Length: 171
Image 1 (cartoon, helix red, strand yellow):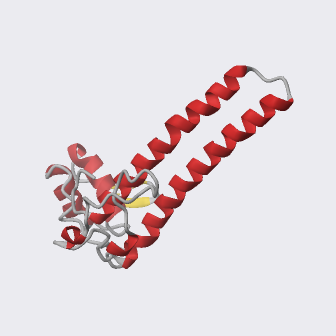
Image 2 (cartoon, one colour):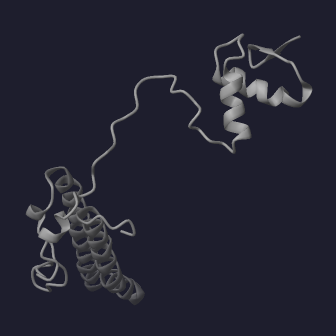
């Protein structure tokens, strides 16, 4: 008999497979059971999607954001040159591929912006303390922000830079 579910006509042959046919009707064209074999392959086979045809459009080309093999050997990781005065990590944007440079520039901008905003916050809080009555804890808190946030932003920047520059899956 015909079962009306989800606005589609579904052939109902066996009560134990009614859910299978409902799913098949969502996969296949309305009023047919062509999706039954695809639904059976995906449900019975443990959700394997290899049997499912692509119904709409073309697949996207694979994104090639990782550095090619051997590219990370060109980077001089032992040349510590960043931040300019402290020289804690290696950073040279010219050693990266062109399509990765924009992301790394944004990561660097995030680091610089975080450091600048936290330093301005400490200076503003000190000046406000000279002019008005504020709790002394505000100055301590602004100083703690200067101690905590820029190193965290530097760590985030460096992990992002290393993750884009190398092929290490852990990064």
